[in-house]
Every structure is written in C-alpha cells, then in structure tokens.
Length: 337
Image (cartoon, rainbow, N blue to C red; front, side):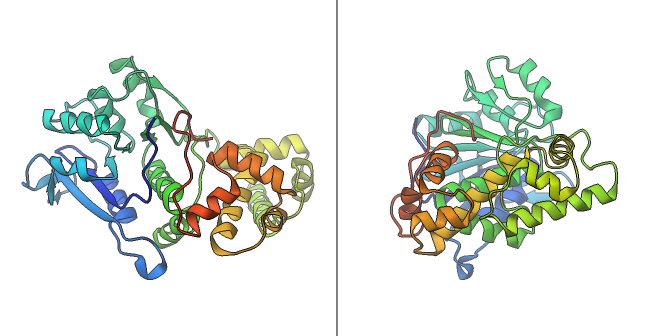
C-alpha cells in the first residue's frame, strides 16, 4: 500500500453541494492558514469542484472553488468533508475523480460523513472505516461491504483515512500533519486553534458518563494528569497515580476512562511518545537521555513504543523531522494504534 508522500504540500479539498460548512472550515484552518512565521510548513490548499460556480453551504454560506477536479491528480493529499444529507448521491464527476486519484495512489481522508462519499465511490469496499457514532448503523446498512468500526476517533486502512464526527475531524487533520511534518508543526497549529494537540485514533469517540460524579473528582483527575505530564520521567503506574488521587486503583482507572475515553497507561504512553517526538525534533539529546526524560527508562523501550505506535524508530523519526530527511515509513495496513 502507498503511504502518505514525503512532506505533502498540495492539499485538495473536495467540494460539492451538500458538504458541511464546519468540515470545510476545519480543513481550511489546518492547511489554509499561513503559519510559516511560526515554523509551520507552507501548504497549498485548493478548493476543488466539478466547475467554478459557487457552492451553497448550510447557514447562508458559500464556497468558491479555485480549481477543477482535475487538480486532484496533482495533489499530495485529498480531504473530503462530511455531508448534510448522508444518503444524498454525490455527483458522478466527484466519484470518478476520487476513483482516478485513488488508482494513482494519492492518499484520501474523509471527515465524519465523508465516509459515505468514499463508500459511494467504492473506495471503502473490503476496508475498515469509521464515521460519527450515530451514523455507524446507517453506513453499515447502505454499504454492507464496508467494515464499520463503531468506536474510534479515526483510523486508516491502506492509504484511505476516515474519522468520526466534528471534533474527531480536527484530530485526524492534526494527525495527518503530525505524521508528515512532525509533532511540533501539529502542536503549533493546535495551539493557534486552541484545541487538544494529540488524541489517538483508538480513543473512544463517545463517552457515556463524561464527568465523574463530583466536581472534586474531576479536579482531582485533572490534577493527577497535570502532575504526570510535569513529571514524565517518573515511573508512574496506575497504583501510584491512584494513590495521588486518593482512590483505589480500580476506582481511579474507572473514573479516568470515563473522563478521557482511554486507560491511564494508554494515555501515559501517548503523552510520553508526544514528548519524545518534540525532544527529537528540537534537541540533539542522545536517545538514552530522551528516553529517560520522557519516562521510557531505556532506549530499547522507547524504540519498542515508537515501532508499535508510529511504525518507525526514534532515530528514524529524528532524521525525518529534525534533519530534513525523508519521512519515516508508515505501516498503512493497520489502523492507528
């Protein structure tokens, strides 16, 4: 399978009547704002459509295309917004252009209900895909050839990416920046958008009980997370974090997952990887020191987690994102860990 290309700079936003204004705005905010003065690479975002006529969007808005669909073949990455009506047929020209681009090996990402557009084009046949939790049954019913994953923020199968609803679209866009241009570029964009810089694809998209029973518990869990981030080098365990929260390990783990949608150890590993990425990008620290400062303890352990989560090594990551080499190989046959 073809991975995302080196340093994708040409981003194609696919537009047609019925695409969601929110998703168009997310794509534009991530790739359409010039942040080169803050170290973010220059992106060339183009709004593509079958013809140059303005496209009406919900809420009295409109989108004016600046390229036709033929530009998809020149792009490095194609992003498809979600839809207002998920069962409305997409224009035949759009579906054909997506098929041609996919045949050429160009990566394609769909936000939320954009998975329905890819399914109409036949690009999700025999693949795993995710969409908004409230649309999973609808996608499965109308496109039974798609393996719909019910509980993930985003995932990829081959060189096709799909995401859950609304905020998960932001997560996927930032993730695509992160794996191609580095954690610092993604974090800079996230800071300017005032959004979370890193959520993993397998984090639950829907949490039945988003807050603990009391405000005190919520404050305690937030305080424990802040402590763990400030002391990443320490050998934290569920037991030590629970003790700091004044809870039993079982109660702490239950409240933590109810609040964040992930387990304490998975959250901790994610934060350690993100911290290691930044040190690898920003500093010349030896790899054992990076491992020590981020709590992995040893270079071997850090290397194992990088392989499992990023499909590359710390040394390969540093070469790609700090020294300007080719980006690390990404295993596109598996979903995001």
